[in-house]
Length: 307
Image (cartoon, rainbow, N blue to C red; front, side):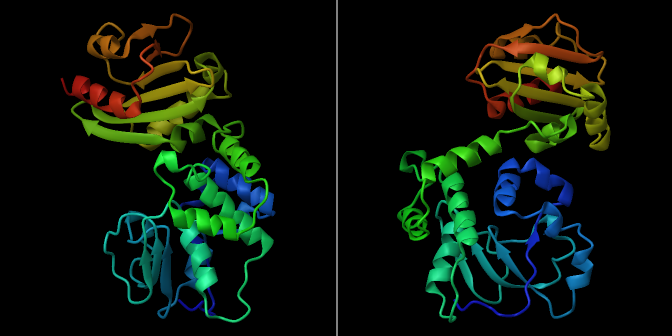
């Protein structure tokens, strides 16, 4: 692939307000001295400024338009570089979809293969690519099932020293929620479904204990804001503390929900009701069955609420 010299504007495929949820990304940006205000997002005013009838789109780390691309989907996809399953999206030019651990591996490879003169990676670019490869492949650990030989080869070509230390810092940043509001915590890692009861969201939060979560500023107000914005009838919050305690909080506006009627779920998850103060229309439990992740909890609640 030849490196294009046409004017190019990198666009992050998220709204600007969501970038703070990617704490590992903001860590790397800070490390590189890049302000989040200097980037272009799907809802940035600059989008309309760079759009013109001859504009072409290059997709990186995904290979097909989805619902988030409403402002871009009418434009030609000129190239695709991705490591996910190929969804066979349209592409008029270069396409490389390869099942490696990190898309940054493919980007590094493309720089090495480029026929363009004087194309070289700066130290900051090497750090950015290398950090991403480490995070995506869990520090190049083959036992985790994400790492390929090409990931290792391309990472080594970046000549990054102290890779274990870098991985530890990025991993720590990924779970650092100290700068996030309750509203952001609920949005950071959330799944949802609909049933007879209405719209149900399950948010997963790692780090605080139940007491620490309810001590956060404006916890009741921000939870109410989150429920209102997304029209949530039942909000289930999984809180896994650093010392491996697991708590389940249910905020709802449904009259029939109570700790007495939640029996089936209580038994399977081994839930112990907590008697401390908590807001009206909240149920709070300690979950003693630590093996049940959100993936297991979601169908349990869905089946119970359908009844």
